[in-house]
Image (tube, rainbow, N blue to C red):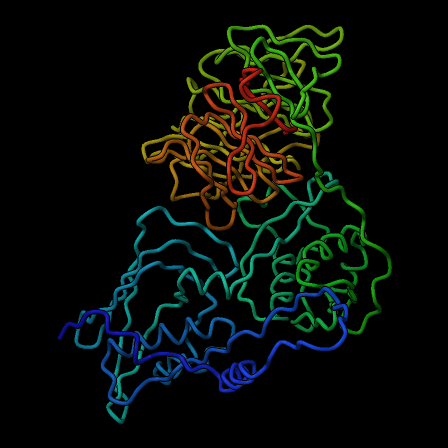
Length: 565
Protein backbone atom coordinates (compact mmCIF):
# COMPACT_ATOMS: atom_id res chain seq x y z
CA UNK A 1 0.00 0.00 0.00
CA UNK A 2 1.27 3.46 -0.89
CA UNK A 3 0.48 6.48 1.18
CA UNK A 4 1.28 10.12 0.65
CA UNK A 5 2.31 12.59 3.24
CA UNK A 6 0.11 12.16 6.25
CA UNK A 7 -1.10 15.09 8.25
CA UNK A 8 1.35 16.27 10.85
CA UNK A 9 -1.53 17.23 13.10
CA UNK A 10 -1.44 14.04 15.15
CA UNK A 11 2.21 14.68 15.87
CA UNK A 12 1.67 18.16 17.26
CA UNK A 13 4.20 19.03 19.90
CA UNK A 14 3.32 19.68 23.52
CA UNK A 15 3.94 23.06 25.06
CA UNK A 16 5.23 22.91 28.60
CA UNK A 17 2.65 23.64 31.25
CA UNK A 18 4.78 26.19 33.04
CA UNK A 19 4.79 28.36 29.91
CA UNK A 20 0.99 28.26 29.73
CA UNK A 21 0.86 29.12 33.40
CA UNK A 22 3.06 32.15 32.80
CA UNK A 23 0.78 33.30 29.99
CA UNK A 24 -2.19 33.06 32.32
CA UNK A 25 -0.44 35.07 35.02
CA UNK A 26 0.62 37.86 32.68
CA UNK A 27 -2.99 38.29 31.60
CA UNK A 28 -3.84 39.42 35.16
CA UNK A 29 -1.10 42.03 35.45
CA UNK A 30 -2.21 45.66 35.01
CA UNK A 31 -0.08 48.68 34.17
CA UNK A 32 0.31 50.76 37.38
CA UNK A 33 -1.36 54.17 37.24
CA UNK A 34 -0.11 55.52 40.57
CA UNK A 35 3.22 55.87 42.34
CA UNK A 36 6.56 57.48 41.56
CA UNK A 37 8.47 57.10 38.30
CA UNK A 38 11.57 54.97 38.66
CA UNK A 39 14.41 54.47 36.19
CA UNK A 40 14.95 51.06 34.73
CA UNK A 41 18.36 49.50 34.09
CA UNK A 42 17.97 49.85 30.30
CA UNK A 43 18.66 46.17 29.73
CA UNK A 44 16.39 44.25 27.38
CA UNK A 45 16.22 40.65 28.55
CA UNK A 46 15.55 37.77 26.21
CA UNK A 47 12.20 36.15 26.92
CA UNK A 48 12.14 32.55 27.98
CA UNK A 49 11.86 30.25 25.02
CA UNK A 50 8.73 28.22 24.58
CA UNK A 51 9.83 24.69 25.37
CA UNK A 52 8.64 22.24 22.74
CA UNK A 53 8.61 18.53 23.49
CA UNK A 54 8.87 15.72 20.95
CA UNK A 55 6.15 13.08 20.80
CA UNK A 56 7.04 9.40 20.66
CA UNK A 57 5.56 6.73 18.36
CA UNK A 58 1.84 6.01 18.52
CA UNK A 59 0.51 2.48 18.98
CA UNK A 60 -0.39 0.68 15.73
CA UNK A 61 1.18 3.44 13.61
CA UNK A 62 1.86 2.44 10.00
CA UNK A 63 5.36 2.73 8.41
CA UNK A 64 4.72 6.18 6.88
CA UNK A 65 3.49 7.54 10.21
CA UNK A 66 6.53 6.10 11.98
CA UNK A 67 8.96 7.81 9.62
CA UNK A 68 7.01 11.08 9.75
CA UNK A 69 7.02 10.95 13.53
CA UNK A 70 10.75 10.19 13.53
CA UNK A 71 11.47 13.23 11.35
CA UNK A 72 9.28 15.52 13.45
CA UNK A 73 10.82 14.33 16.71
CA UNK A 74 14.36 14.72 15.39
CA UNK A 75 13.60 18.26 14.22
CA UNK A 76 12.30 19.07 17.69
CA UNK A 77 15.27 17.56 19.53
CA UNK A 78 18.04 19.24 17.51
CA UNK A 79 19.53 20.81 20.63
CA UNK A 80 18.93 17.73 22.80
CA UNK A 81 20.05 14.13 22.93
CA UNK A 82 17.35 12.65 20.64
CA UNK A 83 16.00 10.38 23.37
CA UNK A 84 12.41 10.50 22.09
CA UNK A 85 13.55 10.31 18.46
CA UNK A 86 15.34 7.03 19.14
CA UNK A 87 12.05 5.48 20.31
CA UNK A 88 11.10 5.25 16.62
CA UNK A 89 14.17 3.06 15.97
CA UNK A 90 14.63 -0.66 16.48
CA UNK A 91 16.70 -1.75 19.45
CA UNK A 92 19.86 -2.28 17.38
CA UNK A 93 19.49 0.93 15.36
CA UNK A 94 19.11 3.13 18.44
CA UNK A 95 22.82 2.94 19.15
CA UNK A 96 23.85 2.99 15.48
CA UNK A 97 21.99 6.06 14.18
CA UNK A 98 24.26 9.13 14.18
CA UNK A 99 22.42 12.47 13.82
CA UNK A 100 25.73 14.31 14.13
CA UNK A 101 27.05 12.90 10.85
CA UNK A 102 25.37 15.62 8.80
CA UNK A 103 22.35 17.88 8.44
CA UNK A 104 20.09 18.51 5.47
CA UNK A 105 18.12 21.77 5.44
CA UNK A 106 14.98 21.13 3.39
CA UNK A 107 12.21 23.45 2.22
CA UNK A 108 9.84 20.60 1.31
CA UNK A 109 9.58 16.88 1.92
CA UNK A 110 7.39 14.09 0.68
CA UNK A 111 7.05 10.82 2.59
CA UNK A 112 5.67 7.72 0.87
CA UNK A 113 5.75 3.97 1.30
CA UNK A 114 7.75 2.35 -1.51
CA UNK A 115 7.83 -1.24 -0.29
CA UNK A 116 6.32 -3.56 2.27
CA UNK A 117 8.88 -2.38 4.82
CA UNK A 118 10.44 0.62 3.09
CA UNK A 119 9.60 4.32 3.25
CA UNK A 120 11.17 6.92 0.96
CA UNK A 121 11.57 10.59 1.86
CA UNK A 122 12.06 13.02 -1.03
CA UNK A 123 13.59 16.35 -0.01
CA UNK A 124 13.92 19.71 -1.72
CA UNK A 125 17.31 20.72 -0.33
CA UNK A 126 18.39 24.29 0.39
CA UNK A 127 21.65 23.53 2.20
CA UNK A 128 23.79 20.85 3.81
CA UNK A 129 25.98 20.91 6.89
CA UNK A 130 28.59 18.21 7.49
CA UNK A 131 29.76 16.70 10.76
CA UNK A 132 32.37 19.45 11.23
CA UNK A 133 29.82 22.24 10.81
CA UNK A 134 30.68 23.19 7.21
CA UNK A 135 27.65 24.75 5.53
CA UNK A 136 27.15 24.54 1.75
CA UNK A 137 24.20 26.21 0.06
CA UNK A 138 22.48 23.92 -2.45
CA UNK A 139 21.75 24.79 -6.08
CA UNK A 140 18.20 25.85 -6.92
CA UNK A 141 15.77 22.90 -7.01
CA UNK A 142 18.31 20.46 -5.55
CA UNK A 143 16.66 17.23 -4.43
CA UNK A 144 17.74 14.26 -2.33
CA UNK A 145 16.13 10.94 -1.53
CA UNK A 146 16.43 9.12 1.81
CA UNK A 147 15.29 5.53 2.32
CA UNK A 148 14.21 4.06 5.65
CA UNK A 149 13.94 0.31 6.25
CA UNK A 150 11.45 -0.86 8.88
CA UNK A 151 10.74 -4.01 10.88
CA UNK A 152 7.97 -5.07 13.26
CA UNK A 153 8.87 -5.73 16.86
CA UNK A 154 7.54 -8.52 19.11
CA UNK A 155 4.32 -6.56 19.67
CA UNK A 156 3.80 -5.99 15.96
CA UNK A 157 4.68 -2.28 16.09
CA UNK A 158 6.69 -0.85 13.24
CA UNK A 159 10.13 0.53 14.02
CA UNK A 160 12.93 1.84 11.80
CA UNK A 161 15.70 -0.74 11.37
CA UNK A 162 17.87 1.48 9.20
CA UNK A 163 17.83 5.28 9.15
CA UNK A 164 20.34 7.36 7.14
CA UNK A 165 22.88 9.10 9.38
CA UNK A 166 21.50 12.55 8.75
CA UNK A 167 19.38 15.12 10.54
CA UNK A 168 16.60 16.70 8.45
CA UNK A 169 15.41 20.18 9.49
CA UNK A 170 13.49 22.97 7.85
CA UNK A 171 14.93 26.47 7.42
CA UNK A 172 13.09 27.91 10.42
CA UNK A 173 14.34 25.25 12.82
CA UNK A 174 17.82 25.44 11.38
CA UNK A 175 18.03 29.19 11.97
CA UNK A 176 16.77 28.89 15.55
CA UNK A 177 18.60 25.73 16.59
CA UNK A 178 21.98 26.02 14.88
CA UNK A 179 24.55 28.67 15.63
CA UNK A 180 27.06 30.13 13.20
CA UNK A 181 30.39 31.06 14.70
CA UNK A 182 33.78 31.91 13.25
CA UNK A 183 36.76 29.71 13.99
CA UNK A 184 39.92 31.79 13.62
CA UNK A 185 43.20 30.70 12.06
CA UNK A 186 46.29 32.76 11.15
CA UNK A 187 47.70 34.15 7.94
CA UNK A 188 51.01 32.42 7.04
CA UNK A 189 52.95 35.52 8.17
CA UNK A 190 50.99 35.37 11.46
CA UNK A 191 49.99 39.01 11.13
CA UNK A 192 46.21 38.63 10.87
CA UNK A 193 43.38 36.37 11.94
CA UNK A 194 41.41 34.50 9.27
CA UNK A 195 37.82 33.42 10.06
CA UNK A 196 36.14 30.27 8.87
CA UNK A 197 32.44 30.03 9.71
CA UNK A 198 31.09 26.78 11.12
CA UNK A 199 27.51 25.89 12.13
CA UNK A 200 26.94 23.92 15.33
CA UNK A 201 23.83 22.71 17.11
CA UNK A 202 23.07 25.39 19.71
CA UNK A 203 23.40 23.25 22.81
CA UNK A 204 24.64 25.93 25.21
CA UNK A 205 28.08 24.96 26.52
CA UNK A 206 28.62 22.31 23.88
CA UNK A 207 29.11 25.02 21.23
CA UNK A 208 32.30 26.16 22.97
CA UNK A 209 33.54 22.58 22.97
CA UNK A 210 32.73 22.23 19.26
CA UNK A 211 34.60 25.47 18.48
CA UNK A 212 37.77 24.40 20.29
CA UNK A 213 37.64 20.96 18.67
CA UNK A 214 37.31 22.63 15.26
CA UNK A 215 40.34 24.80 16.00
CA UNK A 216 42.35 21.75 17.00
CA UNK A 217 41.27 19.83 13.89
CA UNK A 218 42.43 22.69 11.68
CA UNK A 219 40.93 24.50 8.69
CA UNK A 220 38.77 22.92 6.03
CA UNK A 221 40.49 21.39 2.98
CA UNK A 222 39.78 24.43 0.79
CA UNK A 223 41.54 26.72 3.28
CA UNK A 224 44.14 24.31 4.64
CA UNK A 225 47.16 25.39 2.56
CA UNK A 226 46.41 29.11 2.77
CA UNK A 227 46.53 29.58 6.56
CA UNK A 228 48.34 28.33 9.63
CA UNK A 229 47.61 27.90 13.33
CA UNK A 230 49.43 28.41 16.62
CA UNK A 231 47.60 25.46 18.16
CA UNK A 232 49.96 22.45 18.10
CA UNK A 233 49.22 19.80 15.51
CA UNK A 234 47.78 16.72 17.22
CA UNK A 235 46.75 18.57 20.39
CA UNK A 236 43.51 17.36 21.99
CA UNK A 237 41.06 18.39 24.70
CA UNK A 238 41.54 16.51 27.97
CA UNK A 239 38.96 16.11 29.43
CA UNK A 240 36.98 16.26 26.21
CA UNK A 241 34.87 19.31 27.01
CA UNK A 242 35.13 23.05 27.58
CA UNK A 243 33.60 24.26 30.83
CA UNK A 244 31.94 27.68 30.58
CA UNK A 245 30.64 29.40 33.71
CA UNK A 246 29.75 33.11 33.95
CA UNK A 247 31.91 34.02 30.98
CA UNK A 248 34.93 31.96 32.07
CA UNK A 249 35.96 29.15 29.72
CA UNK A 250 38.21 26.51 31.27
CA UNK A 251 39.82 23.54 29.54
CA UNK A 252 43.08 21.65 29.16
CA UNK A 253 45.11 20.80 26.07
CA UNK A 254 47.47 17.86 25.68
CA UNK A 255 50.25 16.99 25.07
CA UNK A 256 51.43 19.53 27.63
CA UNK A 257 54.94 19.99 26.19
CA UNK A 258 53.64 20.88 22.73
CA UNK A 259 51.23 23.42 24.24
CA UNK A 260 53.99 25.00 26.33
CA UNK A 261 56.26 25.25 23.29
CA UNK A 262 53.62 26.97 21.15
CA UNK A 263 53.50 30.72 20.56
CA UNK A 264 51.35 31.50 23.57
CA UNK A 265 50.20 34.95 22.47
CA UNK A 266 48.99 33.74 19.08
CA UNK A 267 47.43 30.59 20.54
CA UNK A 268 45.42 32.70 22.99
CA UNK A 269 44.53 35.17 20.24
CA UNK A 270 42.94 32.41 18.15
CA UNK A 271 41.07 30.99 21.13
CA UNK A 272 39.85 34.38 22.36
CA UNK A 273 38.62 35.50 18.93
CA UNK A 274 36.81 32.19 18.39
CA UNK A 275 35.16 32.00 21.83
CA UNK A 276 34.37 35.68 22.48
CA UNK A 277 31.15 35.64 20.39
CA UNK A 278 29.88 32.86 22.68
CA UNK A 279 30.04 35.18 25.69
CA UNK A 280 33.47 34.06 26.88
CA UNK A 281 35.33 36.93 28.51
CA UNK A 282 38.09 35.01 30.31
CA UNK A 283 40.18 32.01 29.27
CA UNK A 284 41.69 29.49 31.68
CA UNK A 285 43.77 27.17 29.52
CA UNK A 286 45.93 24.47 31.07
CA UNK A 287 48.83 22.63 29.51
CA UNK A 288 47.72 19.12 30.44
CA UNK A 289 44.77 18.20 32.65
CA UNK A 290 46.85 18.65 35.80
CA UNK A 291 49.02 21.44 34.45
CA UNK A 292 49.22 25.08 35.46
CA UNK A 293 47.24 27.79 33.73
CA UNK A 294 48.95 29.33 30.72
CA UNK A 295 50.20 32.78 31.67
CA UNK A 296 50.34 35.70 29.27
CA UNK A 297 48.04 37.74 27.06
CA UNK A 298 46.78 37.26 23.56
CA UNK A 299 48.74 38.91 20.77
CA UNK A 300 46.94 41.99 19.48
CA UNK A 301 46.29 41.30 15.80
CA UNK A 302 44.86 44.01 13.51
CA UNK A 303 41.25 43.92 12.41
CA UNK A 304 40.40 45.51 9.04
CA UNK A 305 38.83 48.91 9.63
CA UNK A 306 36.88 51.40 7.57
CA UNK A 307 38.33 53.40 4.70
CA UNK A 308 37.17 56.22 2.49
CA UNK A 309 35.53 55.49 -0.81
CA UNK A 310 37.42 56.46 -3.96
CA UNK A 311 35.37 57.28 -7.04
CA UNK A 312 36.53 57.21 -10.65
CA UNK A 313 34.62 59.70 -12.79
CA UNK A 314 34.39 60.63 -16.45
CA UNK A 315 37.75 61.91 -17.60
CA UNK A 316 39.66 59.40 -15.48
CA UNK A 317 39.92 61.51 -12.31
CA UNK A 318 39.91 59.85 -8.88
CA UNK A 319 37.87 61.60 -6.20
CA UNK A 320 37.83 60.78 -2.49
CA UNK A 321 34.80 60.46 -0.25
CA UNK A 322 31.09 61.19 -0.54
CA UNK A 323 29.03 64.36 -0.33
CA UNK A 324 31.55 66.68 -1.99
CA UNK A 325 34.30 64.41 -3.34
CA UNK A 326 37.71 66.02 -3.69
CA UNK A 327 40.51 64.94 -6.00
CA UNK A 328 42.95 62.50 -4.42
CA UNK A 329 46.15 64.35 -3.52
CA UNK A 330 49.12 63.65 -5.76
CA UNK A 331 47.13 61.46 -8.14
CA UNK A 332 46.63 62.39 -11.79
CA UNK A 333 43.90 61.34 -14.17
CA UNK A 334 43.94 57.95 -15.85
CA UNK A 335 44.14 58.23 -19.62
CA UNK A 336 42.36 55.75 -21.86
CA UNK A 337 39.29 55.05 -23.94
CA UNK A 338 37.03 54.91 -20.85
CA UNK A 339 38.80 54.42 -17.52
CA UNK A 340 36.92 52.22 -15.08
CA UNK A 341 37.26 49.65 -12.26
CA UNK A 342 39.63 51.44 -9.85
CA UNK A 343 41.35 49.45 -7.11
CA UNK A 344 43.98 50.22 -4.49
CA UNK A 345 46.13 48.46 -1.94
CA UNK A 346 45.12 48.61 1.74
CA UNK A 347 47.94 51.08 2.50
CA UNK A 348 47.12 53.24 -0.53
CA UNK A 349 50.60 52.92 -2.00
CA UNK A 350 49.36 51.32 -5.22
CA UNK A 351 46.38 52.36 -7.33
CA UNK A 352 45.31 50.67 -10.55
CA UNK A 353 42.41 50.88 -13.00
CA UNK A 354 41.30 49.66 -16.39
CA UNK A 355 42.21 52.29 -19.00
CA UNK A 356 39.89 50.39 -21.33
CA UNK A 357 38.26 46.94 -21.05
CA UNK A 358 41.49 45.20 -22.17
CA UNK A 359 44.22 47.30 -20.50
CA UNK A 360 45.22 47.29 -16.82
CA UNK A 361 47.30 50.32 -15.80
CA UNK A 362 48.76 51.95 -12.72
CA UNK A 363 47.19 55.26 -11.76
CA UNK A 364 49.78 58.02 -12.35
CA UNK A 365 50.89 59.65 -9.11
CA UNK A 366 53.68 62.06 -8.21
CA UNK A 367 56.57 61.54 -10.59
CA UNK A 368 55.38 58.06 -11.60
CA UNK A 369 53.76 57.86 -15.02
CA UNK A 370 50.83 55.65 -15.97
CA UNK A 371 52.19 52.17 -16.81
CA UNK A 372 50.55 49.24 -18.54
CA UNK A 373 50.59 46.16 -16.30
CA UNK A 374 48.57 43.76 -18.46
CA UNK A 375 46.69 43.87 -21.74
CA UNK A 376 44.84 41.58 -24.11
CA UNK A 377 41.28 40.33 -24.14
CA UNK A 378 38.58 41.50 -21.79
CA UNK A 379 39.97 41.92 -18.26
CA UNK A 380 38.18 41.32 -14.98
CA UNK A 381 37.98 44.30 -12.62
CA UNK A 382 41.25 44.29 -10.63
CA UNK A 383 41.74 43.57 -6.94
CA UNK A 384 44.88 44.56 -4.98
CA UNK A 385 46.05 42.46 -2.03
CA UNK A 386 48.04 43.61 0.99
CA UNK A 387 51.29 42.31 -0.52
CA UNK A 388 51.01 44.55 -3.58
CA UNK A 389 49.81 41.92 -6.06
CA UNK A 390 47.13 43.04 -8.52
CA UNK A 391 44.69 40.25 -9.41
CA UNK A 392 42.66 40.07 -12.61
CA UNK A 393 41.82 37.56 -15.36
CA UNK A 394 41.70 37.56 -19.17
CA UNK A 395 38.61 35.93 -20.60
CA UNK A 396 40.63 35.04 -23.70
CA UNK A 397 42.80 32.78 -21.53
CA UNK A 398 40.49 30.42 -19.59
CA UNK A 399 41.52 28.31 -16.64
CA UNK A 400 43.65 30.79 -14.73
CA UNK A 401 43.90 34.07 -12.84
CA UNK A 402 46.70 36.61 -13.34
CA UNK A 403 48.59 38.30 -10.50
CA UNK A 404 50.92 41.15 -11.44
CA UNK A 405 53.08 43.55 -9.44
CA UNK A 406 53.71 47.24 -10.09
CA UNK A 407 57.14 46.37 -11.53
CA UNK A 408 55.48 44.18 -14.16
CA UNK A 409 56.24 40.78 -12.57
CA UNK A 410 53.47 38.46 -13.74
CA UNK A 411 52.37 35.17 -12.19
CA UNK A 412 49.82 32.95 -13.93
CA UNK A 413 47.91 31.38 -11.06
CA UNK A 414 46.03 28.18 -11.85
CA UNK A 415 43.67 25.79 -10.10
CA UNK A 416 42.52 22.33 -11.12
CA UNK A 417 38.86 23.25 -10.71
CA UNK A 418 39.28 26.28 -13.02
CA UNK A 419 40.37 24.18 -15.99
CA UNK A 420 38.20 25.01 -19.00
CA UNK A 421 36.41 27.83 -17.18
CA UNK A 422 36.41 31.54 -18.08
CA UNK A 423 36.95 33.89 -15.14
CA UNK A 424 34.64 36.93 -15.09
CA UNK A 425 35.39 38.43 -11.67
CA UNK A 426 37.95 38.12 -8.88
CA UNK A 427 38.32 39.65 -5.43
CA UNK A 428 40.95 38.90 -2.79
CA UNK A 429 40.10 39.02 0.92
CA UNK A 430 41.68 41.75 3.03
CA UNK A 431 43.93 39.23 4.78
CA UNK A 432 45.23 37.96 1.42
CA UNK A 433 44.47 34.29 2.08
CA UNK A 434 41.22 33.82 0.13
CA UNK A 435 39.97 34.69 -3.33
CA UNK A 436 36.38 34.89 -4.59
CA UNK A 437 35.99 33.96 -8.25
CA UNK A 438 33.03 34.18 -10.63
CA UNK A 439 33.61 31.83 -13.57
CA UNK A 440 31.73 30.28 -16.49
CA UNK A 441 31.86 26.72 -17.76
CA UNK A 442 29.71 23.98 -19.22
CA UNK A 443 27.80 23.79 -15.93
CA UNK A 444 26.95 27.51 -16.01
CA UNK A 445 28.20 30.47 -13.99
CA UNK A 446 29.37 29.87 -10.42
CA UNK A 447 30.76 31.76 -7.46
CA UNK A 448 33.56 29.95 -5.62
CA UNK A 449 35.93 30.80 -2.79
CA UNK A 450 39.37 29.24 -2.53
CA UNK A 451 42.59 29.62 -0.57
CA UNK A 452 45.63 31.32 -2.07
CA UNK A 453 48.87 29.36 -1.67
CA UNK A 454 51.96 31.58 -1.53
CA UNK A 455 55.68 31.01 -1.11
CA UNK A 456 57.78 32.52 1.68
CA UNK A 457 58.13 35.74 -0.31
CA UNK A 458 54.30 36.02 -0.42
CA UNK A 459 54.31 35.38 -4.17
CA UNK A 460 51.13 33.58 -5.28
CA UNK A 461 51.77 29.99 -6.38
CA UNK A 462 48.42 28.27 -6.84
CA UNK A 463 44.76 28.51 -5.93
CA UNK A 464 43.60 25.66 -3.72
CA UNK A 465 40.40 23.67 -3.63
CA UNK A 466 37.19 25.66 -3.93
CA UNK A 467 34.03 25.85 -1.87
CA UNK A 468 30.87 26.91 -3.66
CA UNK A 469 28.98 29.96 -2.41
CA UNK A 470 25.62 31.26 -3.55
CA UNK A 471 24.94 28.05 -5.44
CA UNK A 472 21.32 29.05 -6.09
CA UNK A 473 22.35 32.28 -7.89
CA UNK A 474 23.51 33.21 -11.38
CA UNK A 475 26.27 35.73 -10.59
CA UNK A 476 27.47 38.37 -13.05
CA UNK A 477 30.88 39.97 -13.45
CA UNK A 478 31.05 41.71 -10.06
CA UNK A 479 32.04 40.37 -6.65
CA UNK A 480 33.19 42.15 -3.47
CA UNK A 481 33.91 41.25 0.15
CA UNK A 482 31.24 42.91 2.31
CA UNK A 483 32.98 41.70 5.45
CA UNK A 484 35.52 38.99 6.21
CA UNK A 485 33.01 36.14 5.76
CA UNK A 486 30.39 37.63 3.44
CA UNK A 487 30.48 38.39 -0.28
CA UNK A 488 28.37 40.74 -2.35
CA UNK A 489 27.45 39.75 -5.92
CA UNK A 490 25.11 40.84 -8.66
CA UNK A 491 22.81 38.09 -9.89
CA UNK A 492 20.54 38.11 -12.92
CA UNK A 493 16.87 38.36 -12.01
CA UNK A 494 13.49 39.19 -13.52
CA UNK A 495 13.70 42.75 -12.18
CA UNK A 496 17.22 43.22 -13.50
CA UNK A 497 20.56 42.78 -11.75
CA UNK A 498 19.86 41.99 -8.10
CA UNK A 499 22.56 42.47 -5.43
CA UNK A 500 22.89 39.56 -3.01
CA UNK A 501 24.71 39.13 0.27
CA UNK A 502 26.39 35.72 0.04
CA UNK A 503 28.04 34.25 3.14
CA UNK A 504 30.96 31.95 2.36
CA UNK A 505 29.16 29.58 4.75
CA UNK A 506 25.48 30.44 4.92
CA UNK A 507 22.30 31.28 3.03
CA UNK A 508 22.26 34.03 0.42
CA UNK A 509 19.86 36.95 0.86
CA UNK A 510 18.72 39.46 -1.79
CA UNK A 511 18.92 43.23 -1.62
CA UNK A 512 16.58 45.48 -3.66
CA UNK A 513 17.14 45.14 -7.41
CA UNK A 514 18.79 47.95 -9.40
CA UNK A 515 17.75 47.87 -13.06
CA UNK A 516 21.04 49.03 -14.60
CA UNK A 517 23.56 48.03 -11.92
CA UNK A 518 27.01 47.19 -13.28
CA UNK A 519 29.16 46.70 -10.19
CA UNK A 520 29.09 46.54 -6.40
CA UNK A 521 31.36 48.32 -3.92
CA UNK A 522 31.61 47.48 -0.22
CA UNK A 523 33.47 48.75 2.84
CA UNK A 524 34.54 45.74 4.89
CA UNK A 525 34.76 47.80 8.06
CA UNK A 526 31.28 49.31 8.14
CA UNK A 527 29.65 46.72 5.83
CA UNK A 528 28.28 49.53 3.65
CA UNK A 529 27.24 48.53 0.14
CA UNK A 530 27.19 50.77 -2.96
CA UNK A 531 26.08 50.18 -6.54
CA UNK A 532 27.49 51.77 -9.68
CA UNK A 533 25.01 51.98 -12.54
CA UNK A 534 25.45 52.00 -16.31
CA UNK A 535 24.17 55.59 -16.32
CA UNK A 536 27.03 56.78 -14.12
CA UNK A 537 25.13 56.96 -10.84
CA UNK A 538 26.42 55.88 -7.43
CA UNK A 539 23.81 54.53 -5.01
CA UNK A 540 24.21 53.57 -1.35
CA UNK A 541 22.09 51.05 0.54
CA UNK A 542 20.42 52.87 3.40
CA UNK A 543 17.62 51.45 5.51
CA UNK A 544 16.83 48.77 2.95
CA UNK A 545 16.58 51.29 0.09
CA UNK A 546 19.05 52.44 -2.54
CA UNK A 547 19.60 56.19 -2.22
CA UNK A 548 21.63 58.54 -4.39
CA UNK A 549 25.00 59.53 -2.97
CA UNK A 550 24.76 63.33 -2.61
CA UNK A 551 27.24 65.38 -4.58
CA UNK A 552 28.04 62.41 -6.82
CA UNK A 553 24.97 60.98 -8.51
CA UNK A 554 23.84 62.93 -11.55
CA UNK A 555 26.82 65.30 -11.52
CA UNK A 556 30.14 63.46 -11.89
CA UNK A 557 29.44 60.50 -14.18
CA UNK A 558 30.83 57.64 -12.09
CA UNK A 559 32.63 54.90 -14.04
CA UNK A 560 33.82 52.96 -11.01
CA UNK A 561 34.37 53.10 -7.26
CA UNK A 562 36.41 51.15 -4.73
CA UNK A 563 37.45 50.68 -1.17
CA UNK A 564 40.88 49.07 -0.59
CA UNK A 565 41.26 45.49 -1.76
